[in-house]
Image (cartoon, rainbow, N blue to C red; front, side, top):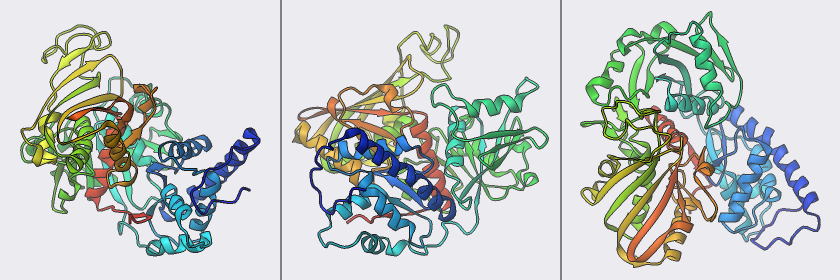
Length: 491
């Protein structure tokens, strides 16, 4: 095995590319059970520059390494990360998140000549023996099982880990007219035309009206209104309800869930109205207080643009601007021309670009009050089923250049506290379908950036379904009090 590098240096091209690939492939394959054991037994999450490596394939792990080499412009490979992961596995760790990529990069830059085991032991000293994030697992209920509801379910199942943090216990929905309704619901979770197959197994237990997904028993509860459900009948207590119906968006309507036995809190997967806190995770999630009963995870577009606006505000200032979203069509539009209460939305979604309005520009002020009144916005619905784009036309507080602004955003995406929210691409060939499944709130497209003095036009892709659902789950974890320490610690 090629010895890991202790300093950043240019790796010579391999004499035999195929042999080099097979060696790295073998290392990635060996990482899978190591990563799985850490997650299953100790609830340790392993990441590669923010990309989750738990339950990932050999090729996914290798592509994560390739991303770092391309964007970070270093020589990080499986040869370097494997011994670091081995060293991690020898420690008695508690539930923490470890970024294997940044930890390895830090080791590669360290000039003390420490053995890898000693370096890792020192870096993760505060992670040893850490207690559980929660004293008991937290029950979660999904109310509504549409696009966002099903994706949140997939994420909660994927993140179940050792089973002692968030546990999806029930899904509440209206009973369909088909006699095999439960089987049909399972099929929708199992197969998705946009996001692909469910990663795991789903068993339908009609006798108990349950879906068993990767060992997680999830009760399917049929109800036409929140007050019809007594969750304690299903052994569910102190649960957080994820309302993904959008039927109620104010505190009065959402508080119907709180009147149900077994429910303690509610989070809405749409912009909240009135005094409900609209949370964009990574920006204002510190506003979440233990006493909060009802919260909103804002909208997909608000989640996409606010992190970038925050970064630009901090780096350059924003005097005013306009946000134009080019948004995938959604289920509230008509498939073919028909009556719709909204303007233009009655026209065939798959055949037209539909000019409509968005409240995202105004909603920004709920997360970034300093931008109140400085942004306008509009939206165009386009004939694609998923992945949207936000175009930010901003007048900055100071002059800059395309190169400077892009380098600033690259650093933000890779190394700042916003690295969970902002991804970065420097590819000149990417298109919308390349971002299906992105776990970030948005992806900054550096090649599209336009800068002229104080005027900047920024292009941000976002998976308006899955990326947004990831933000919802992050808010959900915060509401439940789940906060993982992240290693390595930032300098």
